[in-house]
Length: 634
Image (cartoon, rainbow, N blue to C red; front, side, top):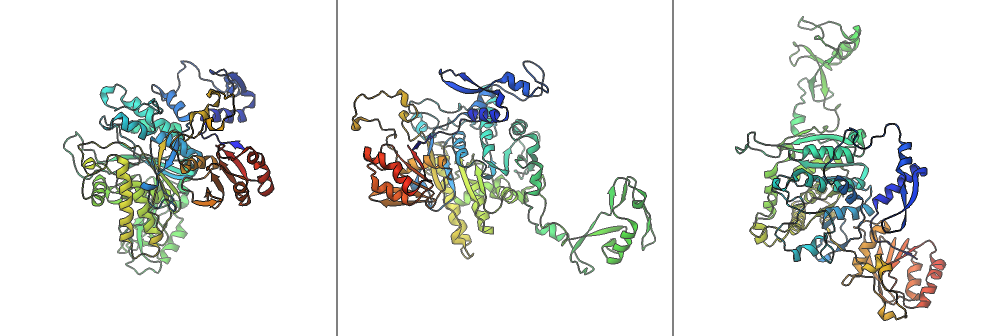
């Protein structure tokens, strides 16, 4: 049996492996700081392989950098052995839902998601802190005491040592106003990129404070060729007297791994009544409603497109300077006879071509300017939350569901996975459920949020919501219920997935001895009662299962069935793709019954084997009944 590593991929090692595949002559070995022999890249040879122009030292070059950028890159590449522990009591429809709500530092969570959602997320939407000098970029001063915050956040080990990037309130007096924000966002975007599918896209909401830096970071991480657009969203409908110029917009940065080809993948927006109302049919044209369109195009062309025509009114018409007719003269008069070219609405004006509603695209190409009437504004978002939480004002700056629905409509199909790793009040989850109810889609959401404490003076705290995660989860519960009530008469509404599986970031389920067995004292006598248990105290069998899922390439929303086999609790995941048993005293009968089910994976604890004879028979039993099963141990 093979031992599970229960640690995410070390991306630095992976990059060495990839470079070694491209340039095998540059792959070498060296002794690391721990005195161990490791693979490495010979950069002198690599420079020779890339020797068009090598830029070194202080030579001038175009670059975007800031203090600790290299540390941010290392942070993104560093592995983690943390885990996500299921929380059934806070979930809704845990056993059937495909939606996830994950609590914890989003960088660590993204690393864990990378293990089994690599290239599987169709769209990411994030609304990161805007770095106004008042918000908390790293979320460690929300009024939570150290004793409360450390074990919940997933950012500290058991001794209280910080496990992730530093967390500070990012005020202008800090002296690192932009640097701290950049060090926060860079590794998260770097890891998030790996989650996007080849045709996936990311939408990032920003204001003026960090837009320019975010654009440069995204150009570096995704590549300038993957830049799609900067959308101007009218987020504020009104006028403020507090500023020199009243701010009324946010930016939405859009990148796609499909690059220019994304325009062939993205969806069109449905036509609204306003766009359809522009098409009339005053002459009862059999082709249906139409509107007037231009008959000249810019630029002077060959003589065949520079003719003069005489209108029914007797006027002579030639192309204006710097333009030409859109068709040859014979084609022009043919279209006049067909009725697809008219001389004004009254027949006495200049010629124009008919643009038929039946000929245009089935929808509208998205524009880079989104006004509040099509994408909502911040007050819409606040009213939506207030309608769900009439007892208190629980969240100050939620995005409107109308905005997120428009993004999802453009970027996703009806069965895609959508990720929001700055979940906040869970507007994205609300919008996804709402859109699924409208078009009978089956889109899935993954929400990630740090359990930031609410201010003790706030309405949210007084209403019983001690952190933002509690608000987000309750919003999904209430929104899901309301959506089903509002659509009670709609066929199939009972199948709408309004549930979510709650997972919480925590330290590994495995004790330190699992990762560093060499540091454990060797026992000189065989005493089974004194053997060191490699499972951390207080962890359940289901906790262990969820740490195993990524290594078996199974989503965290996998269907889980629990069976009893010869008195032992056995997890059957995705109809038997994985079977796992973490009970003690597993004997030959249990192993034989599991082997006969022929799972692709079987996982158990090494402490679970009942006796030496069972251990000796283990592989023989699987060889007899299910040779192909991959057998792993904890």
